[in-house]
Length: 117
Image (tube, rainbow, N blue to C red):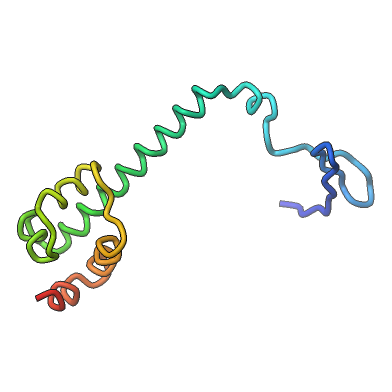
C-alpha cells in the first residue's frame, strides 16, 4: 500500500499534496445517503444480538473451563444460579466485579477458585 500525503478540503475532498490531484474516498457516499433510519435500527439490533451471543459464549466457556455445573459454579463465585443461567443465555451481561472475576477465572481458573474458598 502506497502512502500519500493529502489535505482534506472543507467540502470533504482529499487532495494529494504536491500534485493537487483529487483522491478517491473510501466511503461510498451514495450508499451512506441511501441508508434509512430503519436500516440503522436494524444494524444496531444485529450488533446488540451479536454482543449478547459473544458475552453468553464467554460466560459459558469460562464456566466450562472450571469443570463445574452451573449450580456449582454459581455457589463457588457467590451468585444465584439464575444469574449464571442468564449470563449463559445472553439475557444478562456480567458487569463490574462479576466481569472482572470472569476474566480472572478465564486466565487462571484453579488459582481463582482456590482464592474463593
